[in-house]
Image 1: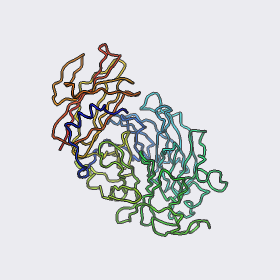
Image 2: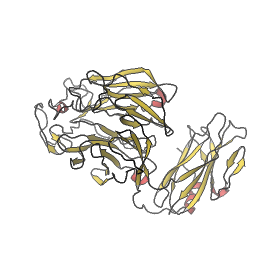
Image 3: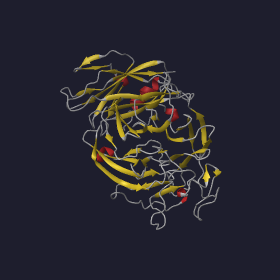
Length: 516
């Protein structure tokens, strides 16, 4: 999106002091949904900031949290699932990268009867809060599951546009058939398929076993026990995998975006960095500690937990200094940690106490770390609640109202996301304005709203007013530095709107608070 004009940047830097980065932002969590039945996944379609979708494991319901309200009517009910609880049921969901135009979303579940894994595709209806139940088609499967546990479940699109599916080793104890090391089986693998070039899918020619007659060509990597939760860094495309351990070691595995695939993460030859077993494994299986095995980037033992819940890398705007930090947890111990990874793990720290929501609430069983459309982190408590990680600091802006839109356009919406203390920054953004037009951004130290054209306008001193250009979706954004406070600045945007008789529309006004 276009940035501020140079004149406005000069005006800002004239009175805003920008210092060095201070102490790390203190965090907490805020509950955003409750009363759910065994929720196991949440997330938003690309660009949809109004909705968060939540999948329930045993009921098969996918619920919609719209503008902070949990809608009573489900988005869709996934039927024919194994709903006996445990590790079966509706296990994962993802939206196609072009969901806004094709309406496709995908679910991963174990079906009733035999517990086999399937990945199905649905299509949204003309109502963004409802899917078309009859649009359901199977994309992948059934993949037979010899036991009821270790079904994996996470599905997601990578930056390459391909669909990735995390598969557990088939269950029981110790992968008795050594499926995770057997390339003729899809169990214990990360799969990678192309759902766009043919139906139901094609094998990408860049898959490591493409063209093989002995190995399943869908395989992207192998040697996984139960990759229940994993994610792509939405900025870099790097892959972080939480793989649940067997006897006593939980691990986080890593694959850089530049990888050509084929990594062997070691199970069941190794559990974490420890040797485990080669019973029932094929002769060509690597030996324990072989160079061919990709080691985890982080492990912990049963003194800290017993079932890792892989997390996400923070790329939101509300907590600028934590961008690039990976958050993850443990389902058994309720622990939550974070670290940074750049060739080695740094800044590893416990977040359990810090992220406790307070007020009699708690995160007792973290089963999923999700992201909303802006990259803010969501945590699902399996008991039925969804929490959002937020800074403890006060919100940087208060909405004063006063917006006015045209008859064919909604009122433009101005917001600020970030922290405005010294060394921090925030994103100033306008959305929902008329497309491909211009506006005036008014900044003022005074709050004297004046009626004008059936709207209300804060003062617009010429020296603190700048022309802004709204893009093809009616938006612009800019980064503003914090510090120099405490003081308040009032902001509002006027936009050219041909749908209004006076040709001018108003965004809401903001009171933006800059801190020391």
